Image 1 (cartoon, helix red, strand yellow):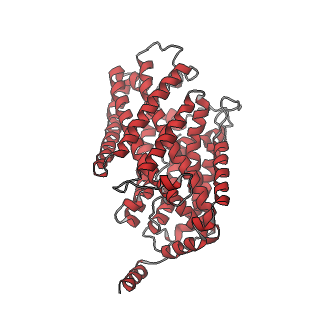
Image 2: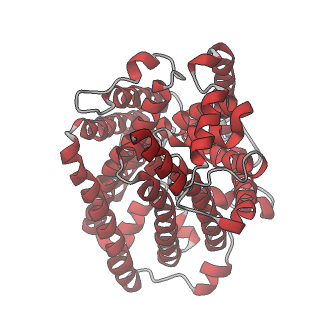
Image 3: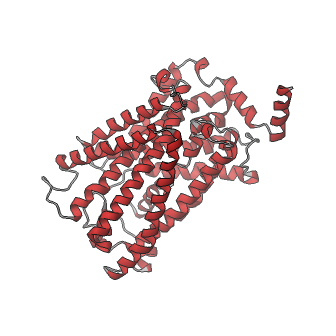
Amino acid sequence: MWSSYVISMFFMFITAAVLAEICSALPLSGSIYIWAAESAGPKYGRFFGVLVAWWACTAWMTFAASNCQTTANYLVTLLAVYEVDFPGGITMDNVKWRALIWAISEGLLIVSVAMNYLPSRWYSRVFKGSLALMMLDLFLCLLWLPIRVSKTYGFRSAKEVFTGTYNGTGAPEGWNWILSFVFSVYTMTGFDASGHIAEETKNASVIAAKGIFTSAVATGCFGFVTTILFLFCTPDLDTLFSLEAPQPFVQIYALALGKGGAVFMTILAALGLIMNTSIAIVAASRLIFAVARDGVLPLSWWIGRVSKDGQPRNAVTVMYVFGAAILCVILPSNVAFMSLVSAGGVPTIAAYGLIGLLRLTMTPNSFRSTKFKLGVFRRPMYAATAFFQAIVFAAMVSPFFFPVTAQNFNFAGVILGAVTIFAVIMYLVMPEDKWLRPETVRQALAAGDLTSSESASIAKADKD
């Protein structure tokens, strides 16, 4: 696990730098599909723009529902800690148990969405509160958890942590290791979020681009530290795999910290996840607003409206309706819901890799106005982005368990294929003059190639 995390950090930092380069040149809301369109050039820009717009909307709208279910799993696992006798048992095969998780998830989604209706001047407190909770959680995990583990069941050995392997997938050993990239990459995915709010960011060509790269670095570094921490603090494999509740980390807290400590850490994690979900909705709603503003989505005329204070409230409402509908899938089948959740990360990874490939093959010398220059390393970095994201994409659409059955089939690739078909239909049906005409792409490319001095000269000429 640690080796795949180190490799993931290296390549995800490169991917973040590639996106930061183009974000600096084109700091626009809905960034990622604009970046894909401009990376493809005038001839193919419209097609790839529509394609990535649908991919990105699918990914970000699914993420909110997924986060709410994750938060619910933290909370309901406390029932297992206190050995509550739940009717039918604490298992996802029990429809009553799934109904409980569904109800809690729906409530958490309402809370997360409701925060997005706060006045914008208040919302900065949500950002600061979320950061404070995450840092407190990390601080306690770094200090309190190891101290208590040393006094209870004890640490795992360095040999187990750094050389031990476990194949729980049934896949060949090499592919089993490749599948571990799904976890390591998923923890760092989403750093393009700061680009989606670029139009609301001062000095966006610098701040938004820097936000993309620094968020990837911060997430990767802290995630690696946390991974090593839990590898040492996790009990032996027999004990670990006997923890059958939805969120084993809560039971690990209980083993190390006691029931009271587990309750405290669970509440802390849940509050942090709620705030993080709300922040994710901020970025996602700006993406959906931008896509709708450009006429790519159904009901674009309504979704693309803003409130009197300039906030995309209708896009937030769409996020809620979509997320609430997805959560309902928990009721009939947890397998179907997990397939939808796993499909949420696939479009983002596909978009990252596609942008790297397009920059390498279509527009390797464009966007000279960027303030985040990659210099002579740009072509190798484009190639590295496309290569690594292709590997991760293959892992994400691969079966996670072998042999494959109807119960463990990974529908992520099927779902992405369906979304891609809808995108192609929209591309064919939507008139060319309605969105991203070749002339528009060409003008944006030209603007992205203007240096700072050239832009200043043009602005001065227009003023005169």
